[in-house]
Amino acid sequence: MTESLWPRAVSAVGKRGLLPEKASSLTPRELGNEVAMRGDDRLLQLALGWYYPASYGRTRGSLSDEEATRLVVALEAAIAFAEAAAPEQIAQPPAEIPRTRQKTKSCELCGLPIMDPVAAGF
Image (cartoon, rainbow, N blue to C red; front, side, top):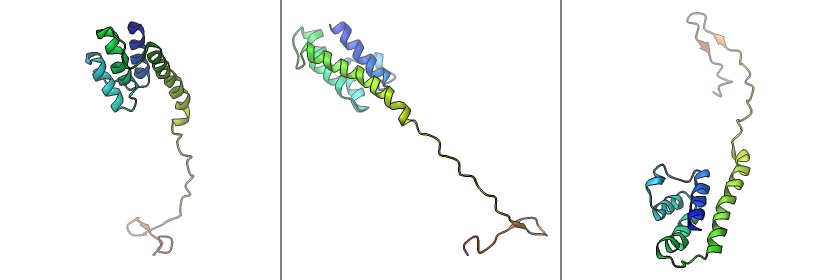
């Protein structure tokens, strides 16, 4: 079971953009810490509470197999939630406000615009 759940969990957080560039060189704990710093501590919970005990100790950790499976399913569900929310989160460009061109007078000598003191608020 560890051979399938852990890669699924890592894939799920990767699809959400939470994996660091150096992910392949990190241990499960380090990877969980990096993802937790990016806002989701569930991979760290899975690593410490289930993956390490099941992989190396061949014992039951603080998470049962069922709890670990539910956690991975929740991580995978977060992908669908993020994808569904993504279109709403994309900022729409503000509607362009048509600008009216003010008529300005130019200096007959130099050609520079002459500012109207009333329109400028003076």
